[in-house]
Length: 223
Length: 223
Image (cartoon, rainbow over all chains, first blue to last red; front, side, top):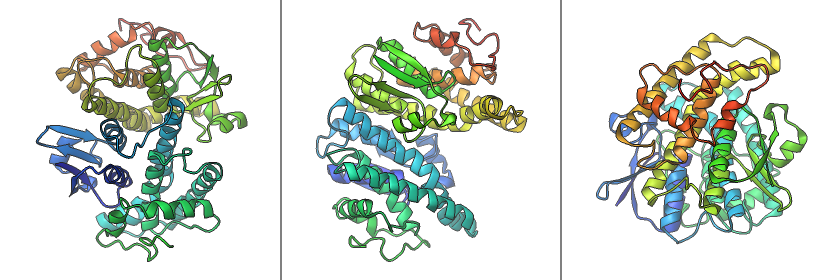
């Protein structure tokens, strides 16, 4: 049985959980807060970051959301995540990287720092200037997703792909932290409602992280 | 014919150039400084980052070093870059991401900012505190590579892979900027000497970026 080292508000863990759920891969969750830097976890992943997926019987350790998703897309044919011809696969990987790097660095990471880590580690107040700037840039990302969805059925093209699950994972963390403003973003809101209603998404939306409460619309498909 | 939008000291462009060279993919170089934010370039890649690879006759645009490398590994069998069973492929991708994200963010990016962008954009002096800290962390990365090469022939295992070319691309930029100190890192130094002597690496090492001069050992295989 796979064990997934993760924590509830880690967008990269959420991305892997969505993919494992869609592909029907059984796994147990192990809660890991990377900022605690547990020795046993650093031994598993010297980068000290979630997610890590371990099958101790088989002696397999998979590290990082993209290597894990590529692994299961290569070994499990259910719900292909990176599909189509080589050019479409490049577009799926481009957008996946866009959300994992650009959206994460510009929006998700500062929000997690201000609204989650400060609360958990030092009980300090968030810096409202940083929050406002992250929300302003987040709005630009929603504009870009609207633009994509004006031209395509799903984010990377005609088929549902890893780009959609990756974007939904990051947006769900932004939403949990109360920083998503859907006004003026009907296309992306409609797309996100469809993503939220997928069975693999439901367990994620039902979880709560200690001391941090999401807005009331967070887990509703009709929001 | 492919056109590669890149600049000489971009480590991600170097990674792609090494892979195209190893695989024998003909391409032209187009110099692009992403910080100039040319409208035509932003139209190609809304993230505004190099590298971008365009085949205008075929109407194909590939964006980002990892999607480009995966594309050619899927479509060109010469010198496989991500090879072996699914677990080894995950390890190759883990290390590739380690160098592209962790080594880049902690070492290469601050060095490029202090020693290249400040010089080109504002002619300001580098912040020696930032340089020292980047070199200190870079030394830790060399320790980790020594550890890997103590146990393995190449960085990800028994075979030369994308992890090696990615690491070499980033190290070559650090070296150009005069911030590599090989003392105490014999394993990685020997490995880098082998990487430098590959024919695909030679053209890169012969290039010079305007106004920034590398140390005299930079292009020598025996350094």
